[in-house]
Image 1 (tube, rainbow over the protein chains, first blue to last red):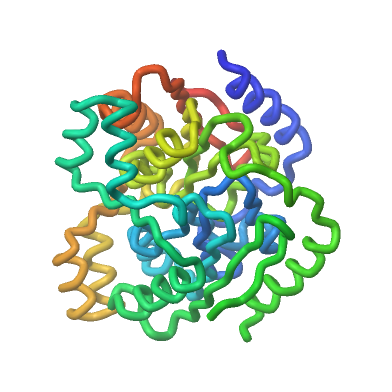
Image 2 (cartoon, rainbow over the protein chains, first blue to last red):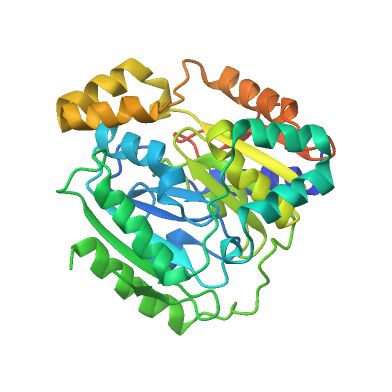
Length: 170
Length: 170
């Protein structure tokens, strides 16, 4: 068992011993979802004020609305959420490369079979060159798709990894 | 401004005032990623023992490895993570429906334009009928894809929303 796996087990033992929230319902109590980045420097519960049971939290590389669409539709249409809080962040890895860079790195690190698989899947890494514009573009995407109805409130934010601050963009 | 947006602003003000971790680096310090569900009843940082800066956290409906593949490849090939902790959970919404149910709900709730868009995108909601098997299937998927090299340690777990416990499956 790896150190990381041991940590999960040890943490769970402690967490379980004081756990009192086994009664929470499946649908988020406050009927909203947060879409943010997988970045290790973000703790959505503490930074954005999400109590256990309140909101869905979707996280992927770059807080991509496109990549999160499946989860967003499930959250809203099957589990009743009615608001989207989208949070990208300063210092995001997605600002540092382009698709062709990632394709090159996969070929170099993992070889031609992996590279061929990547091409066959046509994986788009969805990097972006400018942060505020990326927030606006994703909000536009969410407004444009018919899978997110017009009565869903959508706001766009930037979390600053340097200060811990979350500021509104749109 | 909605109550939820006000809560983000108020929380941020408080969080920022005691924030001391602006120095953390972009690559996760402990070089691992956690893939878990967007479910509102999961707080990965507390339940799985993730300190700020330690690990990427990818979350989507059902903790789907397939849906998370883009983020996983970015995490490992561009940001140096070397271990995957996959955690699905009891009471998951993904156990409660099938693709055709979700397609029917979208058509009923959002109308024929949304339904047509859903079909055009060919969106697969990736629901699953059995929890432990779904963990095993996702681990198999991660072992099979050449985009995750063999030296990446992968473990599969189930979080119990009723007890707060995280137990190992594979």
